[in-house]
Length: 475
Image 1 (cartoon, one colour):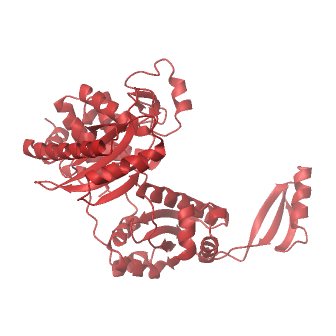
Image 2 (cartoon, one colour):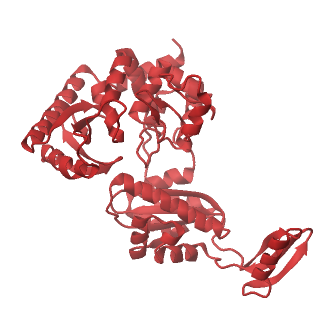
Image 3 (cartoon, one colour):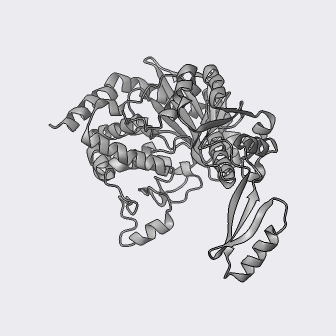
């Protein structure tokens, strides 16, 4: 047994649920399933209520007890009815527990339920009762996923899935939610079915190339060129129950290559610590000031308060807004070193920009077309000759027209402030954030960010990670 296997055995002892815990979790999950079933009967809602997900497949790990209960209803119900009819029934089944409405392709409910040994996260998800292949929503596949994985994973291989999930959690890449952009549970299970063992998964991914894909049911055998025409995402793993779906669609490029790099590190220097989620200490204002003192850049954050939205929609709109504002800054010649988005999903939403400099010179050189392009030259001259904002020129330099212009925006803070206070939708800011920033915009830079660090501990943790600039698995 080599070091890698020794480490895996140590980790298994920590993450594989003991039999007593399994019985407690399964009993509580079944209790809630029956409660949902009873409420469906009371509401005269015809539904097959079943336990799916990692508890049903026995691929969950200690500390992350989560049960997925699916309400399979008639295809005659509209997607609006999945929300308006099914969710109230599910709420009644969870009436004594805290409930959060979340959103995948359509809304579902999440709750934390107390058990004899701790807590169980429960998701109640409406879907359609359809034959395989006749999908009406993404969640319709889940019962078929459960049956597929049960049929293809032995007890030993289920522990290999647990290792993969724990490793992905340790590097911050587990979860197909929009915030994380990582690997789903079904994706992890499919990878182990494909490769047979956790070690083989990380070995293969340590040598990953962009032209690769995984198709364990050989749906595309002999048609390999077709795969990357159909699926444009960086990671392509064909769903074993649906040849038209990519299980890796949610994985962002940075998370794919995070996994690739971390796999290389694990193979070179295996350690149990690489399977544990890192605990980050909050950054103190003093530490923050010391860290940025000699950084040489300008850090600006645009913050706003609570936004009422389902979590996935919140993160989707925040990332869209972040991309839009980066385009605004770069389109006005500000060099963005790095940008990030963060939310506590309750009272504070922050989009952060780190720039080479906050202020730009009042004027700039602008290149025009080559002189040989007659029509473009005429247009350029008409646009800039004797026009407001032209400092000098246009003149010919080598073979090209050049003009010296006054900049419209020289302050990054003023540019962001004007863009957001005017609504921001004209520059691509998402609707929820356009409204929030218009009503409550707080722009801070450098030292002033200390106030946010003092007032919000989770933001202070985020800022420590951001300023380090390293993947969590890099010591």
